[in-house]
Image (cartoon, rainbow, N blue to C red; front, top):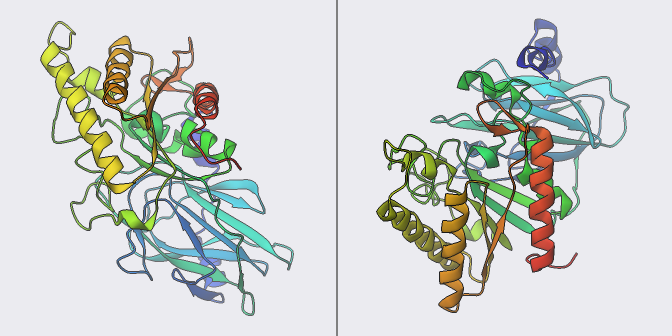
Length: 364
């Protein structure tokens, strides 16, 4: 699917007629007890939760024939699921708080809404204020959230950057509308295990540096943030304790740590492994008893170094960390070397099999 076709699917829910419809709806604030938020949110203001990390979701069950959303976000694309089925892509047109109609003409019965953020915008913060329902309609108690929890730490592969593209290369900004994290390996693994997830990932980032070698852009320094690119507020790790953390960091280090001849020096390889050990120690500190899966993509440098980190950890008696890898899939890359939807499915299959074989999640 090319990006022009994808954009044509975005229903413009901010037309004048829809604005008139929205004025007749009742507002349900974001802190309503029947409204579920998934992913890493800043809840400093519970009536206007903020987000910038990828993979955040909103879930509600409601009555009535229409549903809308109040948010401040004119840059992200969202998948709209009604009654368990994908309906369309939605994008707002305002950076300030505004109301948008998501669906109308529904049967006047019980419905479910899942609104998922498809892509990831950097260096900005967005907010969600609540939902809009028919007069007399209401939110209903949702089912409990899935018991199993997985956190994914990673880069553009984990974010699923450009996975719905159909061309091998494109300007970075054009990857935004063809990025769909719901078809990325992180969500596919999560769905396979009937779990919930956090995606603590940023395109271009690594364990030590970003793909250009900028050492200020590394994930360990951002791991304690409620908002991806803001030093404050800090994330409260007690809010959400995963059973499993899947780490896939090293692709951008492999690029950013190379010298002019395309080699990574022994000193920089050691630095990568040292930072990896430090991140594992930090994960144990904030998530006592968590299972850790150190994952390597196809570059042999990444596989050798991640495998060595795991071996050193286990030799030191720390048996909570495990190694897994996924393959290179010939012809399976789009949008500047990123996995296609089909490749994400294969990655998810390989990593899900490893998680099952290693028994890293509680039995359902």
